[in-house]
Length: 124
Image 1 (cartoon, rainbow, N blue to C red):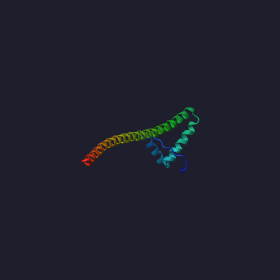
Image 2 (cartoon, rainbow, N blue to C red):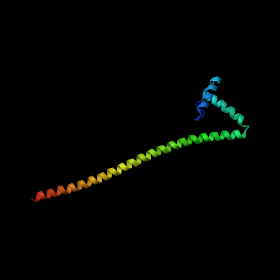
Image 3 (spheres, rainbow, N blue to C red):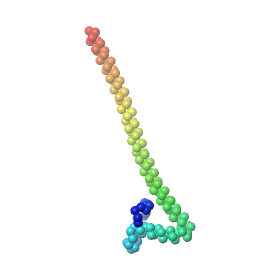
Image 4 (cartoon, rainbow, N blue to C red):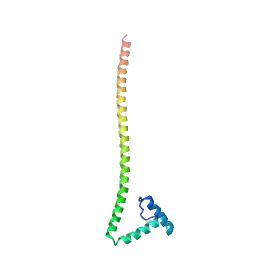
């Protein structure tokens, strides 16, 4: 098979994979060549059978849906992780700001005390 041909990823039951492995060993073809040959044979036979065509279209659509669902699910999970991280960072920033405000208040009081001590010292 040429490397520039379209590729697809599918999930198949383990027992079907075992059957394909045995068939490819018997035919002397690669796994890809075996699958393509069997699909071509199946589609040629199915083209005369509208019900089989409908089943094939349904299976292909279902496989595409499952793949897309998995992809979207991973994106949603990643978004959730990033959102939680952002919320945690935002909470940490607010806590740091509150702490800075408290420290600024303490520094202002210490400055006033210092200025008061300096004034009393200068007056005496």
